[in-house]
Amino acid sequence: MVKKIDHIGIAVKDLAAAREFYEKVLGLKVTEEEIVEEQKVKVAFIPTGDSEVELLESTTPDGPIAKFIEKNGEGIQHIAFRVDNLEETLTRLKAKGIRLIDEKPRRGAGGAKIAFLHPKATFGTLVELCERD
Ligand code: ZN
Image (cartoon, rainbow, N blue to C red):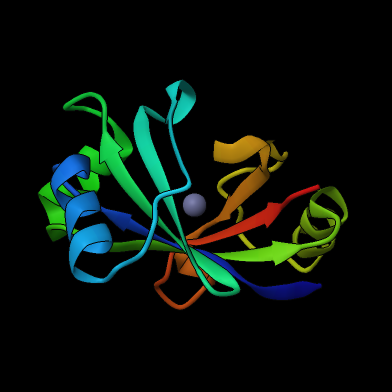
């Protein structure tokens, strides 16, 4: 079951510039910056109390984040909910006929296990489920 909002994913063109806004203007702190090759993104995590902001910058012009920005402009790209057992959750959703982008968990930033649900199944929002140790 869903525990809480783990993070909100925000697509940006320039991670360094966006980081500066969150750090210098909002007074938050980036705890982790990392490249996730598999998803062609550079990400920065910014804790805000019990949840985090995940800034995402594409590492290639044809990556999913670059395509998202091309279509929608910069802004909120996905919302991630924390679950206890991702594998089990995916099995349960599949049994309910919920359309999944990832049938199996894959590795996300910060060593989390993640899977995306299809926006058609979630009333328009790209939903990520994520499990952390
Ligand atoms: Zn995410």
